[in-house]
Image (tube, rainbow, N blue to C red):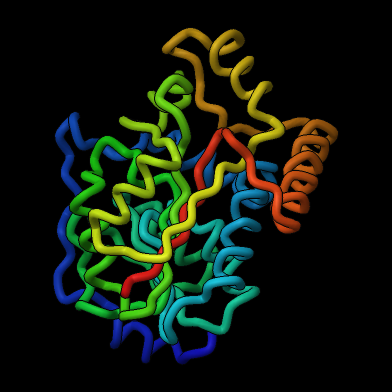
Length: 271
């Protein structure tokens, strides 16, 4: 991790945590969904593809020197991947304290429970901040969370977000994981501009598989009571889907941009 664990804890351990709200409106993702995430995120094609795109973004725009915060770290799949690739100190925060505990055990990062709307960290604490599929959650107020991301980043710090795309793709999956909103690239860019970020880049990804995603969510799983898309796939199918995302990633790296996709990846700088 590039720093002694005790030094990281001294620098980043919050003096007081905000306990997660437990009312129905702001309930965290169900424990069963966290269990699924924990079980599959290191091998499921979608998580592996997403994590590679985050690594690409951080390689291209690493931000300022200093620690990296994963705001909404879930059960730690990205933190574990970063631990093997980055020399930064790594810190994770999740609304669900048990998920944060699992993330710390999995990755070796300092992790804590807390609220993305009011981060328990000092101003300018981090050189980079990653937040994947968090602004979409019904417990999160995008304006407040982005203001907090801006506050805890150092000048020159990098922000990397992943957001689910297009409201018309809302499905049983969103209900299961408590997504309240989906975004277009234009909407995401406007939100970050309003929050004071600059050098904003937005790119759709999971584009080649978008027709299958529409078929899966709008026809196969059209019932609101259907399960989420997080699940173990047969190895042959998982390998095939991951290969398609790899082809898409290669084409994106040589300059091809997609007009639509299942997700929007956003990169920005805190000036």
